[in-house]
Amino acid sequence: MRRRLLATMLSITTLAVIGFGAPLAFVIERFVEENATSTVERAAVLATRDVSTTFATDGDPVELPGNADGIVFGLYDPAGVLVTGKGPNPADDITRAALGNAVVDGEVDGQLIVAVPVAADERVVGVVRASRPTNASDSRTTTILLLLSALGVGVIAISGFIAWVLAGRVSRPVGRLRDAARQLGDGDFGVHVPTSTIPELDEAGRAMNATAQRLGELVGRERAFSADASHQLRTPIAGMRAAVETELEFPRDDPAEVLREMASDLDRLERTVTELLAIARADDSTETVDLVAVVADLEATWLGRLRQEGRTLQTGPVRYQPAALANAAMLRHALDVLVDNALGHGEGSVSVTVTSTTDSVTIGVADEGTGFDADGRRGTSPADGHGLGLPLAQRLVDAMGGRLLIAESGPHPRVEIVLRRAPSV
Image 1: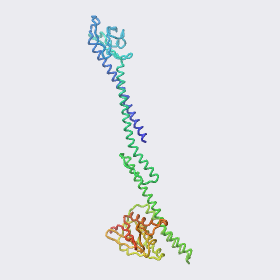
Image 2: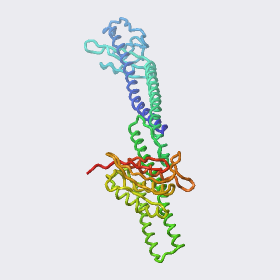
Image 3: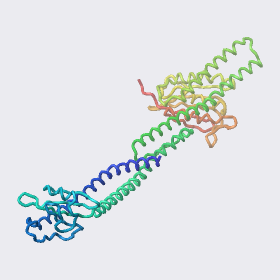
Image 4: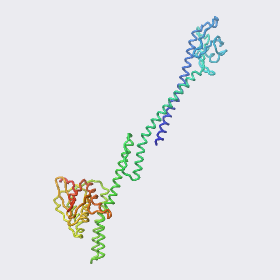
């Protein structure tokens, strides 16, 4: 690109120099010729002042100026005969034309000739012919044209340097924009196009940065959905498998009973997938959430599972607590993660409490286990896919503008979700 810009700017400059220089060279050549003609004509006019109007009759010798500036003079009578000086004899066509009482000039055989009539009593009595070689004016014209050409070459050279600098100034940010587009195409969403001094390219760079950020957020949410789905779906799928295996091992009298349980679990599973997709693709907007409905849904989901493990679920009074500013789906899944964590790694009864202050609402999940280790984990093992729970809950709570706190690390650990309190209606 830099070479193309340089070639384009040099071509434009060269055409401009030629377009301006060619007419200027013609004008200079004409000016030099006219200046040389004026010089010779002026010398011839001055020479006529030294010629007596009676030179053809009185026989007195006529003294013409000497050979000054290479100009040679000759005096002719009305018949065109050379009287004195130097010149062709008889007179040439230019000299004869001057006998018609007109100043005539021209070029013949490399000589610039000017013929000036000598008049007396309103009639032409002779002609002074002045001539000078044209090589002097030609040399002057050549010198000026060479200087003009050198100036044109210098202008092109300077413009070439400026074009090289400007082409680099343009090509570098364009190259960075191109590299960023390639990185973005390769899946690197952390690209950042630095600003330059070219507003149009800066605008394109900002658009590229914004696109990369949006694509990164979108892909990040899709990846988060994969991780969240694997974590959130593992427990209900495991419960459904256990129910099927139990039914196969110890079949009940009514086989439709297990199908109804499976249908209920499948409905809950379908809702979980739908909510996870909505969370992955939605923005971080919040709404007024009724905590009574959230805790009731939490009981319906986990009470039976905890009983199967010989444990209980206790929920404190919620109906008199204020609503919270949150995302209902995100809040349900965050609480599911905390209860699942208490079920898988805790002991004894699991309790869910809701408390409030003038500007916040706190939902706490506690159990009677040994608590968290120094790294904030409890019984996690990367081999079995666990350990995603609390980070998932942390991400969901952060998206709602809340805070996830380990209020008690153990024993009897307690994890709290602190949300903004919804304004009273």
